[in-house]
Image 1 (cartoon, rainbow, N blue to C red):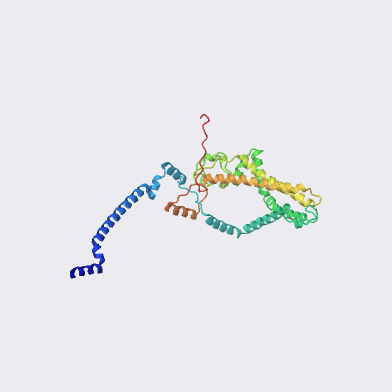
Image 2: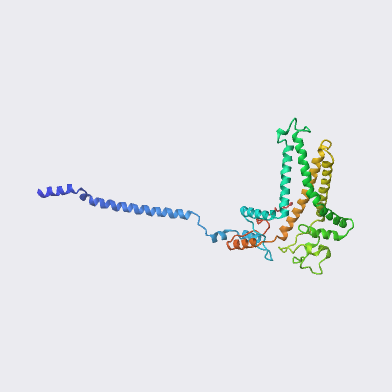
Length: 364
């Protein structure tokens, strides 16, 4: 009886001792369930990984590009046979910095300062005249905008007089060279003397190419002129002959009528300025026809711009084919980018050429 009481007291003091077998069994079951869950989760993760696309290394990505595309990109970036490569394209920040540095170098010269001041005056007075013609200052319309004695009409007259003087700088300042070109052109067109065209080709060597020069060897230039070169392909003087093309490819011959067109455009610009000066300085604002000033200014400006556009387009065409010189900075950037694996398209824009549209077969 005493022992049973003692055992009962022990069971009351340690109630968990009697449940220990059950606890051990529950722990084993819990471990078993946990292991099964972890095994199932690993199987699910393996299945998920198998469903995900495989990660490609840089080598795999390179191999994944079609071979035709790789060959095409290589053709666009490969140097020419003589090793020449067009200058690389810079970021807009670097280009702006380089442009400002070049402008400052030009501005610090006497001629650079003169032309900068001249251009600013043309823009300022021309802009003011444009605003006056648009009636942008209603306060000047007193008593009316078109009244001959209104402040607006007076300022229109003053602006026109200043612009007439500014336009005389280029129209008359360049007149000797313009009439020289006209004289050489007339020698070629009227007298049939080839010398006139050869001299014009030397003067305008930056954009004009003589007929037949596209057949010359790419290494022929003013410093390397064999005796068997046709005379009609050599400028007068010989030193004015275009340099050998940097790309090893010669630009096609320029159509001669473009030389005629450019020269006559500049001559008409000078003649229009003569008429404008006669109208502006030979007549007062009361007797001068209202249409005459605007007509002569428009003709002079438009014809000069068209002639300059012809020279710019042809010069751009020559540069795209024959190349432009590379500076030390350009060569250094090309070498550094090549080491980094950065390729530049070998053209003047450093851009991938546009694919030409294929003409559809009419029989299909």
